[in-house]
Image (cartoon, rainbow, N blue to C red; front, side, top):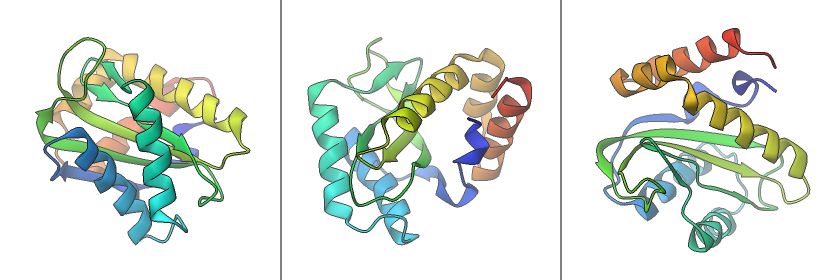
Length: 155
C-alpha cells in the first residue's frame, strides 16, 4: 500500500484552526464531511473520540494518528492537518503535536486499516520527511513529501 493511493490533496489542511486535540479531530472529520466522503458525521466523530478516550493517539515527535472505524465510510480515508501552533495531544513523549493524520475505515476492513497505520508510522519515522513536513506551509508541500516517501519505499 502506498500513501498516495489513499491520500488526496483535497483532504490536507494547513493550518488547522483548532487549538486543542478534540477540535483538531473534529476539523479533520469536517473536512471529509464537506467533501461528502462520510455519510454520518456523528458516527465518525464518535468512533474516533471513543478510540482516543482509550489511549491517546499522540505517537510522539509532534505527530498524532487519531483513527477509528465506522459504517458511515465505504473505504479507507485519510485527512491530514498541520496546526498553526503545537497543541497538547497527551502524546506518549509528553510533547505537543503539530501534524495530525486522521484515519477512518469501514468496520469490516481491518487489514487495510492496520496496513495504513503501519505505513503512516514508517512515514513519520523518516527524519528527512519529518523536517520537510515541519517546514511545510501548504497542503501541496505536505503532499510532495508524501509522494517523495512513497517513491523511496517499497509498497
